[in-house]
Amino acid sequence: MTELNETINNWTFALFDLARESDALLAQLSNDCAEILKIIKQNKEYLKILNSFDLPNEKKYQMIDEAFISYHPYIVNIIKLATKKHMVKYLDIILHHFIELSNDKLNIKYGYVYSTKKLTEKEITKLQTKLSNKFSAKIILTNIIDPNLIGGIKIKVDEFLIDNSILGKLNKIKALA
Image (cartoon, rainbow, N blue to C red; front, side):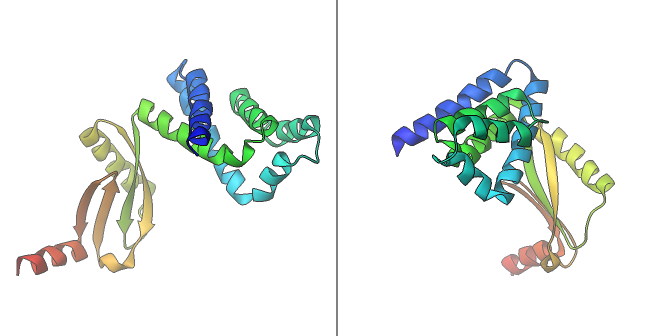
């Protein structure tokens, strides 16, 4: 299994090395990878077709070109190479690792803001700006509705937690009693 992990890491770092020529390219490729991961999750049969020994590689390459025409050639070529080497079943791991490396290099952190109702884009943007200043990183938040909070919000970024919910305050009072 170690050899497989090493191979996956090699592929990830190869794509990362190509993308590091500029932050803009790195961000573009990271976004492309995120979109392709969503596509792959919705179309698991597609990966089975690309991994098949029954279909000639040229036909598979044509399918890849047609399916991923709007994506950067680096990503398309990684998919083709993974297909050729029958590593396409590990493509999601490779792309996921690439996104993690990119986010680390671009200083981007993802987190969640839990609330009892859907927050507006303006509210989320305001929270992101405040947290970006606090963390000295670009923070991107996803709003998750949690009716158990009763009221207020709870924010989680990495291991950092801000609990400004009524439930959180009740739990603090309960702990003191």
